[in-house]
Length: 395
Image (cartoon, rainbow, N blue to C red):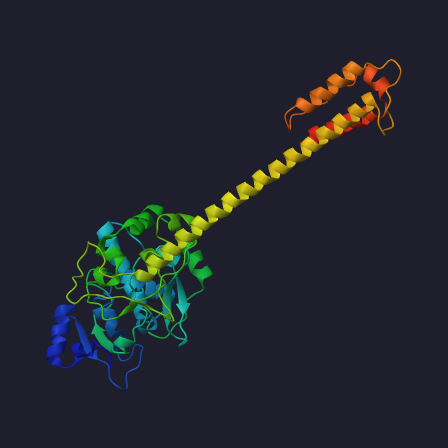
């Protein structure tokens, strides 16, 4: 038995339930019994009681909810409560923002996933997508499996044609994602970036919190942990784990505990009363990693500077080799041309040596060897000149 069971406890409670959740007189309601199942039977259709009290479901059903159940091939009790909150929260956003998000837009942001039970399904936020509805509970065990059965004009309104397709009455299996996307293409559906941008920037209703959009008092003590988003823009703006990046199903091992003061209003606007300390810590972690990335970049630049210094040193060595070869040719030594040939101009050889020695590292150029130099040092000068040319080209 869940926390909302008291709404269906007796005739007086049922009448209050009809008044509170605007159940029309054309719709009959009754609580579930021990022998009742989860599908349509004898004209009665079951709905999760929490989907009406917290999920925003009203009778007759909203067209967007009918379209989702019909295209996904699910009977009402096959969709878990958080799925109803996402769909009806989208309806509320359409009204507030004057947009028209549909079932294909929901499929663009969420994946329809099969639960562990095998016959129920839930919506899970896709990576790098903005959550339409935030602050979803990480568990709905508090609600139990209480159901409310309805009969009569619960599906269509009076102004709707009778030829409108009905939602499934039995347990169904949804089409694959590829089949649903192909159907959307045939219907000429395209992503409306303006609508999604409006949703992402909307900070009213406590940043699109489910309890504020749908107008109920939250009974849960923890929210679903936000999914990690690796986009650098989100880290720079401190939105890596913001309310738009939450998971929408699957309990986490260590839920984020939040405190909601008693008597907290759930009207639209204002700041959220929830202190998302874990989200703040993760955002700080993202900023720290970003700073570390910049430090690594600086170290890379330092490494490049040291490499350039080594290159300059090698160029200086090449310059010294050229000068030694020219000196050996002019004044003797152990080289092949240690003694200048007859008629060599020693002054011109010394000028070449001085030009090499005073040139700045990395810009040395070896003067072209004249006939006198070539004749006076046929091996040493030629060897030094070629070595200098190779060094200049490598630099």
